[in-house]
Structures are given as C-alpha cells and as structure tokens.
Image 1 (cartoon, rainbow, N blue to C red):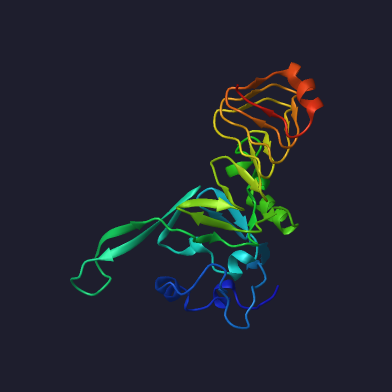
Image 2 (cartoon, one colour; image 1 turned 120 degrees about the horizontal axis):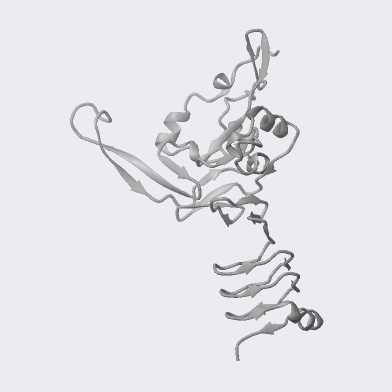
Length: 263
C-alpha cells in the first residue's frame, strides 16, 4: 500500500477562510499545488480496506467520483442547506458585544441564485442503489461495499452540467430534481414512465402502459391516452381531448404535424 499523504494532507489549508470570504467558487481546486489524490485505501489491523468514496448530497443523492475531492462543490459551504430539490442560505449574525463572532443572534435567510451545488464530472449513483427495499438490500439498505465496487468499475452517471440552483430550486442537466425521480443526462424516469428530451408533461396527464412518445411532443392537461397508442413528432393535443385505441389508425395515417384541437 502506498505510504503517500492522506486526503487531508493533500488539501489546501486556506479552504475554510476562502469559503468564509467567498473567494472560492465551485470547481476551484481543493488540492495543494503539485499534490494529487492519495490511494483510496486504508490499512486497518493489517488489512487493506478500500474507501467508499461516496457522499450523500442534499440528504437524498449518492455522489461519487474524483471530481468531488479535486474541486470545490457548492454544497460544501456550511451556510448552504440543501435538501432534495431546494436549497437555502443561512448566514449567522452575531451580537456586537464581546469578541466578534462569539455570540450568535440569529441566522439571515437567503435564496441562493446561480450557485453550482455540484460540478460537472461528479458521478450520480442513485440508480445503482435502486428503490429502498430491506429484503433486497437496495436503496437506503444497499451495501456500501457493493456500491463502491460498482462505482470503481465505471458504473454510475457522470453529470455533464452538474447540479445548479435556479431561484433556490436544484437543477440537474437543466431538469428540476423532484422526489423519487432519477436523472440520466436529460432523461427523467418516474414510476416506469420514460420522458425523452424536450418532452413536457404537465400535471393531470395519465399515461398507460405501452405508450411511446417521440421528442418535441407537448401534451396539455387533462389528456388521457390509452394503451398501445403511438404518437409521431410534431403532434399537438389540446386540453380535454381523449384518444382511444380506435384513434390509432387515424393519427398514425396522417403522420407528423397533426393538430387535434377543440372547435
């Protein structure tokens, strides 16, 4: 095993002061000049143990990859509280009496805008854990060793744009992070429904099994679609329109750019 410096020894010594002063930005190097990340293993009781290299972000997302430790991440700021799809900033305000910064009076709330919580290159490992199930040892019950081995083999999703804040809402690859949704480079999977890029699905839409939707199709509220119905690109459906299996031939025959609307 390498006897090189441990992770803490490889890091800059001015990180805390830079965070407090606001002079460090997401993506800035955390490593000292000329230093690299150490071997991700420890020697415990004569046995070599690999590090998990897994971080829980926002209380809900499994993050990994060298980028987490090589570059500064926005959620490392202790004044930022990130919970699932939203984040808030809390700046302590101290009483003027005594030594400055000793007695806290209150915390000033702010809504961070444009803050990069997670930089590009960080690996999202939510999909490797799966849904929480005690019997199957998945989700929150997943074995860390198995997750670490899967990540070491190259599994997981590398974020190309990272996770950023827009008016306090956390966005991953430009898509809002909602509870229970796994994000994969612009594709959101929710309860078995596959959403392609550019596809917007407002609330109140019911999607049945076997439904295929092409890119660029916009569906309005209140539309019900039956099983086996295929829609081509460029088809726009207005509110209140219900299409059944019998409409398949009519829609398929006319192809793209078909608009079905109210009179």
